[in-house]
Each structure stands twice: as C-alpha cells, then as structure tokens.
Image (cartoon, rainbow, N blue to C red; front, side, top):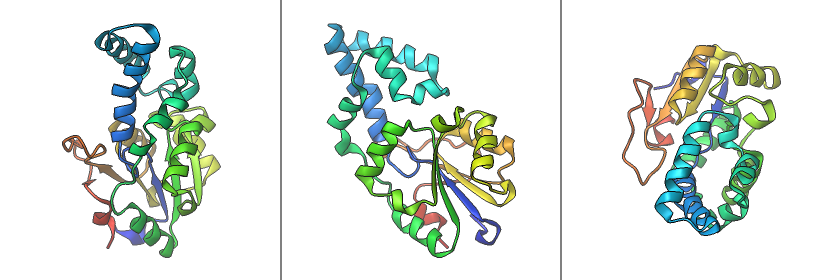
Length: 216
C-alpha cells in the first residue's frame, strides 16, 4: 500500500486512528447525555436529543473538540466525566509495533490531533504512547481544526514537512479531504475507528483495518 522510500514524515491522528473511537462515541453519545439528564432533571431521551442537535451545530469546528467549550455550554465537569469511563480508552491493535518500526526506519513521527489538550493529556497518560512521537500538535494550539486549510499551513510552519513525501493516517474523511486539498500525497483512512461498530465506507481512500497492514 505504501512505498516507504517515498515517505519522510508520518502524520498520525489519535482518536479513531491510534485509539479506539469507542471511548469517545460512548462518552459523547451515552455518558454525557446521561449525566446531563441527571443534572438538568430531564428524561434521558430528551437530553440526548438536545445534545445531538448541539453537537451537530458545532461539528468540524474547534469548539466541537474543546473540553472548555462544552464545560461552559453544558455546565458539566467534562474531564471528571471522562475519568469515569477512562477504562474504555484503548490503543488499536498493532499501533505500538507500527510506531516502533517507524522509529527504527528513521521516519519523523508527528501526532496531529483535534483533541483538546486536556483530553490529550488524559489519553497519553492512559496509553503511554507519548514517547513514540517526535512532536505532538493539537489543533487548539494552532487555532484551526484539521478540517480547515489553515491547520495544515500552520502545522507546516511549526513542523516542516514536504507534502509530497508525507503520509497522513486518519479516520476522518473531511480531514483527509482537507489534507489532500493541501497537497499531502499519501493518505490512508481507518476503516473501523470504533471497534464496536461496523467498518465504514472510506470513499475510495486506501484504508486499513489494522496498522499491521502498513508494515512491510
């Protein structure tokens, strides 16, 4: 799938790519509605319906990924709620082997994530993945979500890479589209971001079920 001789830099998404998206889906679609219903005295379904509309309105923006934004909007301690279900944070199979192989091959390894720094800190602490990266960049530090062109421009200024010799692995099709439009040549989608859900259509992007498929 990949001509590794043509790759210098590997950009990796976190949620749904390196980590099982089941944690995030369960958190935002089940756990937060439950706690919100309790806090507001609402029936669960009414609370969930309200939150789905609010999520949808912010999708693809920095606010959607911001712990601080949702703590203010929902008047909930989001990080405390994340700790309640943090046992669900899991690394996808073969990720550690893949990261180790990249290191031995001398590739530049960059975690490029939309995760808010508070979520990022929690997940890196739970998974122990941090030492595998040469750099970790959150969209919140750059002021642009990965779905926006300005993210890739600012990332390149901060972490110089040659788009034609860069690989991005991501589970988000809008993010892959933005990276493609920016000029990143090597793009791979994740077919099953959430291991509790069926594989998804990756719209023609080369896709993997496991990082073992990227190892030569």
